[in-house]
Image (cartoon, rainbow, N blue to C red; front, top):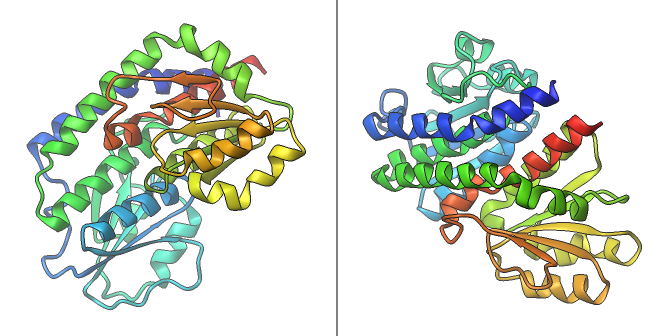
Length: 320
């Protein structure tokens, strides 16, 4: 992995995201690979792919689709029969756990690979392929491919529910604009945000359940690049599992805005003097709030907000 390459990948996000928007505006990549009799969906993946899959499956369930996301390493995959579609996500196309899960599936189950690597091992083991169109990530970190995984899985949601992708395309364009703005103003916000979040006891991130993947992916970026301790949490669940550290550590917390449970969180962080940074909206108790265009739209947040911890991680990695 290369820190300078990671920064380059981040700065290409708007360009590559707009290209994906154009692709989805002109074609449905799922039309040719999803069987017409699909009744249930299983999403498989590891790491970033699993984070994106869990949120995507929850979105599908909220629209009436029977869908689950499973870690590919699980030995208890759903046995849902031939009417189930398995979508295996791996940016590299070589995640060994995901390849192993595909081998363990009954041969009759239809499978689709969601990948960024043409002619990779996963494309050989699946009956269909949907490309991520994230282009090669020269830094070796799954950043654009994570973002595109979310977008393509939302496109699958649209396909399964018969909805138009026009809203998704608009969100992709808006996310590209928001990303442009955050990158262009990096010198205005990044130094202070980094100083506030990169504490001696690590960094914590919280996001609403609907966008939990943002906290998980943001924490992964801090661990993977600069090798800093970081943990992602759901905002409501924070008061049950993470609150305890505010009493005993120099607690630094990034909150992705939008959860109805932020006031509950703020009661603890405020009374215990924790450092809180809000991203994408007003966050009670935050000492610093970072806004960007379109941050009142949930799908724009989902496709944009992780850039903040990604860029904090990238610059901290470069400074090592």
